[in-house]
Image (cartoon, rainbow over all chains, first blue to last red; front, side):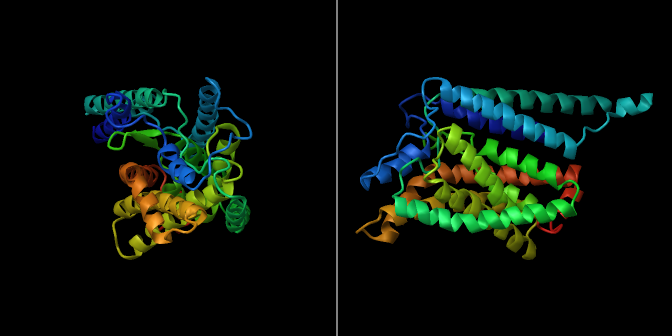
Length: 95
Length: 255
Protein backbone atom coordinates (compact mmCIF):
# COMPACT_ATOMS: atom_id res chain seq x y z
CA UNK A 1 0.00 0.00 0.00
CA UNK A 2 2.90 2.28 0.84
CA UNK A 3 4.32 1.69 -2.61
CA UNK A 4 0.96 2.47 -4.21
CA UNK A 5 0.79 5.78 -2.31
CA UNK A 6 4.31 6.67 -3.47
CA UNK A 7 3.55 5.84 -7.10
CA UNK A 8 0.28 7.81 -6.96
CA UNK A 9 2.10 10.80 -5.44
CA UNK A 10 4.57 10.66 -8.33
CA UNK A 11 1.70 10.41 -10.82
CA UNK A 12 0.02 13.36 -9.11
CA UNK A 13 3.17 15.38 -9.54
CA UNK A 14 3.23 14.55 -13.24
CA UNK A 15 -0.43 15.42 -13.68
CA UNK A 16 -0.30 18.54 -11.56
CA UNK A 17 1.83 20.27 -14.17
CA UNK A 18 -0.44 20.07 -17.21
CA UNK A 19 -3.50 20.47 -14.97
CA UNK A 20 -2.45 23.95 -13.83
CA UNK A 21 -4.38 26.76 -15.55
CA UNK A 22 -2.37 28.14 -18.46
CA UNK A 23 -0.89 31.56 -17.92
CA UNK A 24 -0.81 31.22 -14.16
CA UNK A 25 2.91 30.62 -14.11
CA UNK A 26 4.58 29.92 -17.43
CA UNK A 27 4.43 27.86 -20.57
CA UNK A 28 6.05 24.67 -19.26
CA UNK A 29 9.06 25.24 -21.42
CA UNK A 30 12.32 23.61 -20.46
CA UNK A 31 14.99 25.29 -18.38
CA UNK A 32 17.06 25.48 -21.56
CA UNK A 33 14.69 28.21 -22.75
CA UNK A 34 13.91 29.84 -19.43
CA UNK A 35 17.46 29.88 -18.07
CA UNK A 36 20.23 28.79 -20.45
CA UNK A 37 19.12 30.53 -23.65
CA UNK A 38 18.07 33.63 -21.74
CA UNK A 39 21.60 34.15 -20.38
CA UNK A 40 23.17 33.15 -23.72
CA UNK A 41 21.06 35.71 -25.57
CA UNK A 42 22.17 38.40 -23.16
CA UNK A 43 25.74 37.48 -24.11
CA UNK A 44 24.83 37.67 -27.82
CA UNK A 45 24.69 33.90 -28.51
CA UNK A 46 21.66 32.13 -29.93
CA UNK A 47 21.00 28.41 -30.31
CA UNK A 48 21.57 26.95 -33.74
CA UNK A 49 19.40 24.34 -35.44
CA UNK A 50 20.50 20.81 -34.57
CA UNK A 51 22.52 19.03 -37.29
CA UNK A 52 19.72 16.52 -37.66
CA UNK A 53 16.66 18.65 -36.99
CA UNK A 54 13.85 16.42 -35.78
CA UNK A 55 12.08 19.38 -34.16
CA UNK A 56 9.64 19.75 -37.06
CA UNK A 57 5.92 19.24 -36.62
CA UNK A 58 5.13 15.89 -35.03
CA UNK A 59 8.46 14.37 -36.06
CA UNK A 60 9.92 15.06 -32.62
CA UNK A 61 7.01 13.24 -30.95
CA UNK A 62 7.64 10.27 -33.22
CA UNK A 63 11.37 10.21 -32.46
CA UNK A 64 10.73 10.52 -28.71
CA UNK A 65 8.23 7.66 -28.92
CA UNK A 66 10.71 5.45 -30.79
CA UNK A 67 13.45 6.37 -28.28
CA UNK A 68 11.09 5.46 -25.43
CA UNK A 69 10.17 2.12 -27.00
CA UNK A 70 13.79 1.15 -27.78
CA UNK A 71 15.08 2.38 -24.40
CA UNK A 72 12.18 0.69 -22.61
CA UNK A 73 12.79 -2.60 -24.43
CA UNK A 74 16.54 -2.60 -23.65
CA UNK A 75 15.86 -1.65 -20.03
CA UNK A 76 13.07 -4.23 -19.68
CA UNK A 77 15.11 -7.02 -21.25
CA UNK A 78 18.08 -6.42 -18.94
CA UNK A 79 15.74 -5.97 -15.96
CA UNK A 80 14.30 -9.44 -16.59
CA UNK A 81 17.77 -10.94 -16.86
CA UNK A 82 18.79 -9.37 -13.54
CA UNK A 83 15.48 -9.74 -11.71
CA UNK A 84 13.63 -12.81 -12.97
CA UNK A 85 9.96 -12.84 -11.95
CA UNK A 86 9.19 -14.46 -8.60
CA UNK A 87 7.00 -17.52 -8.70
CA UNK A 88 3.61 -16.97 -7.09
CA UNK A 89 2.81 -18.82 -3.86
CA UNK A 90 -0.23 -20.27 -5.60
CA UNK A 91 1.90 -21.75 -8.36
CA UNK A 92 4.16 -23.54 -5.89
CA UNK A 93 1.16 -25.33 -4.38
CA UNK A 94 0.44 -26.92 -7.75
CA UNK A 95 4.00 -28.14 -8.31
CA UNK B 1 -3.60 -13.40 4.32
CA UNK B 2 -3.78 -14.25 0.63
CA UNK B 3 -6.56 -11.70 0.28
CA UNK B 4 -4.38 -8.97 1.75
CA UNK B 5 -1.55 -9.83 -0.64
CA UNK B 6 -3.94 -9.84 -3.59
CA UNK B 7 -5.31 -6.43 -2.55
CA UNK B 8 -1.79 -5.07 -2.22
CA UNK B 9 -0.87 -6.44 -5.63
CA UNK B 10 -3.97 -4.89 -7.23
CA UNK B 11 -3.26 -1.56 -5.53
CA UNK B 12 0.31 -1.58 -6.85
CA UNK B 13 -0.82 -2.53 -10.35
CA UNK B 14 -3.53 0.14 -10.32
CA UNK B 15 -1.01 2.73 -9.16
CA UNK B 16 1.46 1.64 -11.86
CA UNK B 17 -1.22 1.99 -14.57
CA UNK B 18 -2.18 5.46 -13.30
CA UNK B 19 1.51 6.45 -13.21
CA UNK B 20 2.01 5.20 -16.77
CA UNK B 21 -1.03 7.15 -18.02
CA UNK B 22 0.19 10.23 -16.13
CA UNK B 23 3.62 9.83 -17.73
CA UNK B 24 2.12 9.70 -21.20
CA UNK B 25 -0.16 12.68 -20.50
CA UNK B 26 2.68 14.69 -19.05
CA UNK B 27 4.79 14.14 -22.14
CA UNK B 28 2.07 15.04 -24.63
CA UNK B 29 2.56 18.81 -25.00
CA UNK B 30 5.02 19.21 -27.87
CA UNK B 31 7.32 22.21 -27.34
CA UNK B 32 11.02 21.39 -26.99
CA UNK B 33 11.84 20.09 -23.54
CA UNK B 34 15.60 20.10 -23.80
CA UNK B 35 17.47 20.96 -20.63
CA UNK B 36 21.04 20.58 -21.80
CA UNK B 37 23.08 23.36 -23.40
CA UNK B 38 21.67 23.67 -26.94
CA UNK B 39 23.55 23.40 -30.22
CA UNK B 40 25.82 26.32 -31.01
CA UNK B 41 25.34 28.20 -27.74
CA UNK B 42 28.95 27.96 -26.56
CA UNK B 43 31.79 29.76 -28.36
CA UNK B 44 34.09 27.34 -30.23
CA UNK B 45 37.00 27.71 -27.80
CA UNK B 46 34.82 26.76 -24.82
CA UNK B 47 33.16 23.91 -26.74
CA UNK B 48 36.61 22.44 -27.50
CA UNK B 49 37.82 22.94 -23.94
CA UNK B 50 34.89 20.99 -22.47
CA UNK B 51 35.52 18.18 -24.96
CA UNK B 52 39.15 18.07 -23.78
CA UNK B 53 37.97 17.88 -20.15
CA UNK B 54 35.40 15.15 -20.91
CA UNK B 55 37.52 12.78 -23.03
CA UNK B 56 39.82 11.43 -20.26
CA UNK B 57 36.81 10.61 -18.07
CA UNK B 58 35.12 8.74 -20.93
CA UNK B 59 38.36 6.85 -21.70
CA UNK B 60 38.73 5.92 -18.03
CA UNK B 61 35.16 4.61 -17.97
CA UNK B 62 35.65 2.53 -21.13
CA UNK B 63 38.74 0.90 -19.64
CA UNK B 64 36.81 0.13 -16.48
CA UNK B 65 33.98 -1.42 -18.53
CA UNK B 66 36.39 -3.87 -20.16
CA UNK B 67 38.06 -4.77 -16.85
CA UNK B 68 34.93 -5.28 -14.78
CA UNK B 69 33.06 -7.12 -17.51
CA UNK B 70 35.61 -9.91 -17.20
CA UNK B 71 35.24 -10.00 -13.40
CA UNK B 72 31.46 -10.18 -12.96
CA UNK B 73 29.01 -12.28 -14.99
CA UNK B 74 26.02 -9.97 -14.44
CA UNK B 75 27.87 -6.79 -15.22
CA UNK B 76 26.78 -6.40 -18.86
CA UNK B 77 23.02 -6.59 -18.16
CA UNK B 78 23.46 -4.25 -15.17
CA UNK B 79 25.25 -1.67 -17.33
CA UNK B 80 22.59 -2.15 -20.04
CA UNK B 81 19.78 -1.59 -17.55
CA UNK B 82 21.45 1.44 -15.96
CA UNK B 83 22.28 2.89 -19.40
CA UNK B 84 18.68 2.56 -20.58
CA UNK B 85 17.46 4.09 -17.32
CA UNK B 86 19.82 7.08 -17.59
CA UNK B 87 18.78 7.62 -21.21
CA UNK B 88 15.05 7.45 -20.44
CA UNK B 89 15.24 9.48 -17.23
CA UNK B 90 17.28 12.24 -18.88
CA UNK B 91 14.73 12.38 -21.75
CA UNK B 92 11.76 12.69 -19.44
CA UNK B 93 10.44 16.22 -18.99
CA UNK B 94 8.78 16.67 -15.62
CA UNK B 95 6.53 19.68 -15.11
CA UNK B 96 7.36 21.60 -11.94
CA UNK B 97 4.15 23.38 -10.87
CA UNK B 98 5.98 25.72 -8.47
CA UNK B 99 8.08 27.11 -11.34
CA UNK B 100 5.80 26.61 -14.35
CA UNK B 101 8.69 25.05 -16.24
CA UNK B 102 9.87 21.58 -17.14
CA UNK B 103 13.12 19.85 -16.42
CA UNK B 104 14.40 16.32 -16.04
CA UNK B 105 16.20 14.28 -13.42
CA UNK B 106 19.53 12.79 -14.56
CA UNK B 107 19.68 9.34 -12.96
CA UNK B 108 23.43 9.65 -12.51
CA UNK B 109 23.29 9.36 -8.71
CA UNK B 110 21.80 5.85 -8.63
CA UNK B 111 23.88 4.88 -11.69
CA UNK B 112 27.09 5.86 -9.91
CA UNK B 113 26.14 3.84 -6.83
CA UNK B 114 25.35 0.75 -8.92
CA UNK B 115 28.06 0.75 -11.60
CA UNK B 116 30.54 3.35 -10.39
CA UNK B 117 31.18 6.92 -11.54
CA UNK B 118 33.56 6.00 -14.38
CA UNK B 119 30.99 3.84 -16.15
CA UNK B 120 28.25 6.33 -15.41
CA UNK B 121 30.20 8.87 -17.47
CA UNK B 122 30.20 6.38 -20.36
CA UNK B 123 26.46 5.67 -20.23
CA UNK B 124 25.68 9.38 -19.81
CA UNK B 125 27.87 10.15 -22.85
CA UNK B 126 26.01 7.60 -24.99
CA UNK B 127 22.64 8.96 -23.81
CA UNK B 128 23.68 12.56 -24.50
CA UNK B 129 25.07 11.70 -27.95
CA UNK B 130 21.82 9.98 -28.99
CA UNK B 131 19.80 12.90 -27.65
CA UNK B 132 21.98 15.43 -29.49
CA UNK B 133 21.79 13.46 -32.75
CA UNK B 134 18.14 12.50 -32.94
CA UNK B 135 16.09 14.25 -30.26
CA UNK B 136 17.08 17.91 -30.77
CA UNK B 137 18.17 17.72 -27.13
CA UNK B 138 21.53 19.33 -26.37
CA UNK B 139 23.95 19.49 -29.31
CA UNK B 140 27.06 18.01 -30.87
CA UNK B 141 29.12 21.18 -30.38
CA UNK B 142 28.04 21.36 -26.74
CA UNK B 143 28.31 17.61 -26.11
CA UNK B 144 31.59 17.94 -24.20
CA UNK B 145 30.11 20.53 -21.86
CA UNK B 146 26.96 18.45 -21.33
CA UNK B 147 29.03 15.31 -20.61
CA UNK B 148 31.06 17.22 -18.02
CA UNK B 149 27.89 18.59 -16.37
CA UNK B 150 25.66 15.53 -16.37
CA UNK B 151 28.17 12.70 -16.64
CA UNK B 152 31.24 13.83 -14.74
CA UNK B 153 29.86 16.27 -12.15
CA UNK B 154 26.62 14.35 -11.56
CA UNK B 155 28.19 10.93 -11.15
CA UNK B 156 31.30 11.85 -9.18
CA UNK B 157 29.41 14.12 -6.79
CA UNK B 158 26.69 11.49 -6.33
CA UNK B 159 29.21 8.72 -5.73
CA UNK B 160 31.36 10.87 -3.45
CA UNK B 161 28.31 11.84 -1.40
CA UNK B 162 27.31 8.19 -1.10
CA UNK B 163 30.77 7.10 0.05
CA UNK B 164 31.25 9.94 2.53
CA UNK B 165 27.75 9.55 3.98
CA UNK B 166 28.20 5.79 4.45
CA UNK B 167 31.60 6.27 6.10
CA UNK B 168 30.02 8.78 8.46
CA UNK B 169 27.51 6.14 9.46
CA UNK B 170 24.49 7.68 7.72
CA UNK B 171 21.79 5.00 7.09
CA UNK B 172 21.96 3.68 3.52
CA UNK B 173 18.55 5.02 2.55
CA UNK B 174 19.43 8.56 3.64
CA UNK B 175 22.84 8.28 1.97
CA UNK B 176 21.17 7.21 -1.29
CA UNK B 177 18.71 10.12 -1.03
CA UNK B 178 21.58 12.57 -0.53
CA UNK B 179 23.52 11.05 -3.44
CA UNK B 180 20.55 11.48 -5.80
CA UNK B 181 19.79 14.98 -4.54
CA UNK B 182 23.35 16.29 -4.78
CA UNK B 183 24.11 14.59 -8.10
CA UNK B 184 21.17 16.47 -9.62
CA UNK B 185 22.14 19.80 -8.10
CA UNK B 186 25.80 19.32 -9.05
CA UNK B 187 24.78 18.86 -12.69
CA UNK B 188 23.03 22.20 -12.77
CA UNK B 189 25.75 23.91 -10.74
CA UNK B 190 28.27 22.73 -13.34
CA UNK B 191 26.02 23.92 -16.17
CA UNK B 192 25.88 27.31 -14.44
CA UNK B 193 29.67 27.31 -14.18
CA UNK B 194 30.06 26.48 -17.88
CA UNK B 195 27.66 29.20 -18.93
CA UNK B 196 29.30 31.75 -16.65
CA UNK B 197 32.77 30.86 -17.89
CA UNK B 198 31.66 31.36 -21.50
CA UNK B 199 29.47 34.43 -21.08
CA UNK B 200 30.64 36.53 -18.14
CA UNK B 201 33.00 38.62 -20.32
CA UNK B 202 33.59 41.88 -18.44
CA UNK B 203 31.12 41.28 -15.60
CA UNK B 204 31.84 39.65 -12.26
CA UNK B 205 32.18 35.86 -12.48
CA UNK B 206 30.69 35.16 -9.06
CA UNK B 207 27.76 37.53 -9.58
CA UNK B 208 26.79 35.93 -12.89
CA UNK B 209 27.33 32.41 -11.55
CA UNK B 210 24.99 33.17 -8.64
CA UNK B 211 22.40 34.66 -10.98
CA UNK B 212 22.31 31.58 -13.22
CA UNK B 213 22.31 29.22 -10.26
CA UNK B 214 19.42 31.09 -8.64
CA UNK B 215 17.50 30.98 -11.92
CA UNK B 216 17.75 27.17 -11.84
CA UNK B 217 16.57 26.92 -8.21
CA UNK B 218 12.74 27.01 -8.61
CA UNK B 219 12.87 24.09 -11.04
CA UNK B 220 15.82 22.08 -9.76
CA UNK B 221 15.13 22.33 -6.03
CA UNK B 222 11.99 20.13 -6.18
CA UNK B 223 13.43 17.98 -8.97
CA UNK B 224 16.54 17.30 -6.91
CA UNK B 225 14.33 16.09 -4.06
CA UNK B 226 12.43 13.88 -6.50
CA UNK B 227 15.72 12.49 -7.81
CA UNK B 228 16.80 11.76 -4.24
CA UNK B 229 13.57 9.83 -3.63
CA UNK B 230 13.99 7.90 -6.90
CA UNK B 231 17.58 7.06 -6.01
CA UNK B 232 16.69 5.78 -2.53
CA UNK B 233 13.70 3.83 -3.92
CA UNK B 234 15.76 2.18 -6.66
CA UNK B 235 18.48 1.18 -4.21
CA UNK B 236 15.89 -0.22 -1.81
CA UNK B 237 14.47 -2.33 -4.63
CA UNK B 238 17.91 -3.72 -5.56
CA UNK B 239 18.74 -4.45 -1.89
CA UNK B 240 15.46 -6.34 -1.46
CA UNK B 241 15.45 -8.25 -4.73
CA UNK B 242 19.10 -8.91 -5.56
CA UNK B 243 21.54 -7.69 -2.92
CA UNK B 244 24.40 -9.59 -4.60
CA UNK B 245 24.35 -6.94 -7.35
CA UNK B 246 25.56 -4.45 -4.78
CA UNK B 247 28.58 -6.59 -4.01
CA UNK B 248 29.86 -6.07 -7.51
CA UNK B 249 28.85 -2.43 -7.45
CA UNK B 250 31.59 0.10 -7.22
CA UNK B 251 30.70 0.75 -3.59
CA UNK B 252 32.18 -2.63 -2.77
CA UNK B 253 29.08 -3.76 -0.94
CA UNK B 254 28.84 -0.64 1.20
CA UNK B 255 25.10 -0.57 0.48
